Every structure is written in structure tokens, then in C-alpha cells.
Length: 277
Ligand SMILES: C[S@@+](CC[C@H](N)C(=O)[O-])C[C@H]1O[C@@H](n2cnc3c(N)ncnc32)[C@H](O)[C@@H]1O
Image 1 (cartoon, rainbow, N blue to C red):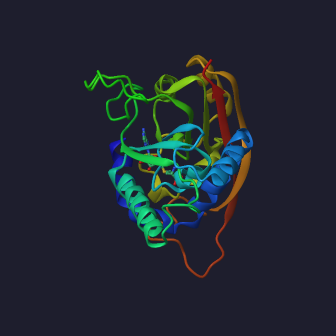
Image 2: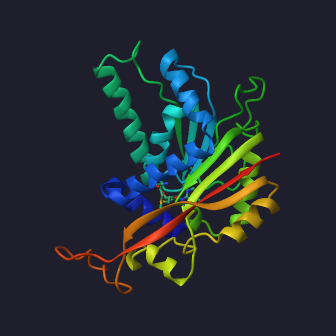
């Protein structure tokens, strides 16, 4: 994980300059909203109410990066705890949040007319334990328990996008995520599918640091979700993304060729969904 961590901290400042990551996050949001249409209703209600302490879901996001999915989902939910292993990514998200508050202030949007925005809490963490003291305390916190072992907040929905393929131990992750959910809480994890040897081409060779899997195997991941205790498990392709790829491994080591038409490939993306009973 440390190689990936360094890679992502180093890439954070330029992360949003890649149009692929914006397109992929926009598609992930659509897949989540199709899975949970109640989120669209919650957004409409909150927009009408102009209510700062809005109704809605408490969400945990694993591997939020610079917050491309986080900030797209924020108008639909009550709160998001956005976790990433790379401090550079968390810093980039903090900066975006600070700028949004500043822009609201300049436009005098603190009062009426302000669109609902969930409270977003960025946390730099590799999540192995649902009771990790770096997670926010249970809500409302038990005022009598000020120890670092006080119970941690539980969530209605856990999301992650393009992160599973960076995590070496899926059974351990799924056990931790199960512990983070409220009873009835759900997982909605999206990542590209391992559809065979060609799936390796999703990453250029210079971007292989921290890549543990060339996509997710749907049947295996579904089995691992059930083994962690999830029910109503469904791991299915939700959309396809067209992406430029290297013609041979290492072609882009010195940068993408300019002025030539790049080869493209279609990559299926899975939505991995399940419920904590
Ligand atoms: C490919 S990036 C995706 C970032 C973001 N979700 C997006 O789509 O723009 C993968 C992110 O997962 C983070 N990551 C990898 N393993 C992680 C772990 N075990 N816990 C938390 N974050 C992790 C990396 O630091 C990186 O920011």
C-alpha cells in the first residue's frame, strides 16, 4: 500500500486534469442513484426546505481521492465521511471544501437560496477497523465517554469508486465495512471488471504502482461479500467506459503520444451492492 500511497499523494495536484476520472465519477453517481432512487427524492426535499440540518443518509466513502464522487453525491445525502490513504488527496479535497465555503460567503449564500450541501469530513486513513479512532464518534456522541475507544459512527451507505483494485485483501476490507454499517445499511462499490487478460490495459505501465488487481472478478467478489455477512448481494456490470490505452506495455512511459489517434478500449464497470441484515 505504501507505494500506492506515495503515488496518489504525488498525483493529487494534477488528478482532476484527467477527463477520464470526471467521466468515471459521473457514471458512478448515476449507478448509485439508480440503485438508491430515494437519494433523488431526498435531494429534492432538501432543496425545497433549504434546511442546513437536512434529512438523508450518512455515507462513508473509501478512497475518495480529490472528492470527485464525494462532491457529486453531497447534494443527495446528509453527511459524508470521506476516507483516503493518501494525505495529498485529502489535502486536495480540504482545499475544495474551503473554497466552496469561501465562494458561498462571497455570494452571500449562507441564508435562503443556498443549495443543500452535506457535511463532508475528509479523513486520511487506511480503513482496517470499523472502530478506528480516526473515524468520527457515534452520532450523537456519548458525552460521558471521552476515551479514544468510544464507539464510532455507523453509516447508512458505504461507497467507493475505482479503489477496490488497489486494496490487496478484499475479505478483510469487507469485514471492516460490515462493521461500519448500521443494520439495514448498504454497500455500493464501483470499479472496473476483470473480464480477462485485456483488463490489464486499463492502466498504462507507468501507473501500475499500487495496482493489486486488474479489475474485480464479479463472482469471486460476490462470494466474498456473502462470506462477510452481506445479504441481497448483486455484483453486476452497470456501465461501460471507453478509454485510451497503450498499444504495447510502456508505450506512454515518457508521456502520451501527441497528434496521433490513440487506440481505445471499452471497460465494463461493476456495481457491487449488498445489505447488512
Ligand atoms: C484510482 S484512485 C480513485 C480516487 C477517486 N475515488 C476517484 O475516482 O477520483 C484510488 C484512491 O484510493 C486510495 N486508496 C487506495 N487504497 C486505499 C485504502 N486501503 N484505504 C483508503 N484509500 C485507499 C488512493 O489513495 C487513491 O486516492
